[in-house]
Length: 324
Image 1 (cartoon, rainbow, N blue to C red):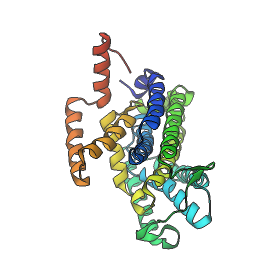
Image 2: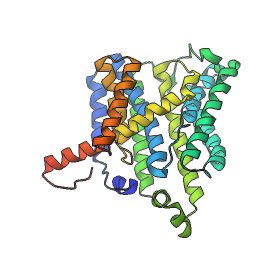
Image 3: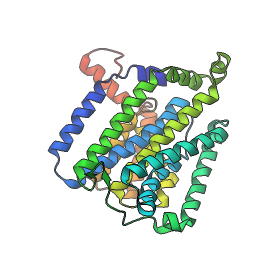
């Protein structure tokens, strides 16, 4: 089943269910930490969606996606602390820089495919880490940027957990709606053609490089917004936001939820964030547990939790081949 086929069978019902859940969660949950964790989970889900756009939509593994996540985080940190910008100003600045840089990088790297693209993108993210460590005046070096000014969005204090949660959830919902619109556009159809067979797509008159570049820039902007949304949770911006670690985490979320399924990264991010919290897992233990889980999932249910959810819906409805 192709990326396009899966997305075309993904109704808006999950979006509506998600909105209802978000509203109920914000009203029912009173624990500030759980609300803040919920907001951060939405930020991680958004980042995972950006990776899924490249992995499931373009067919490339963007190991350097953390570069754009970090740009979003540093956009808020540097913008607020060094230039006196508001939170939304820093978020916008990070997104614009990510879009501009991805346009330049894409023109160079997207002519590569497969492992070559992945390695080059990883190398660029590694260079960004070195730059962040050495530009101490702007980035704080190894210590990072901390003691950030209070964060407000149109007058709303994001230090209030419920407001932060609703902001992150709204951004995630907006991204999902955007991706649903993209899948049904001419761009979405062209992108799927390129993913399946770029040589045939080119023969049919599709500008393969342009479609890949558009997807790359869109994924970079989504990643930058996710990085900006992570700052109210972490309250610090360091070079680690540019490192490959956050990319590996997001890739695990995508694989866990299901590649080429729109809601897979969201489901994966939810499991990835909630399970360690309730099981009180150490960071190293968490990585071991999820690595083993990914191996088992790839062996038993290659399409991730999406395949499990699809089987469950089929069983409940008593109908075969039900798509969600």
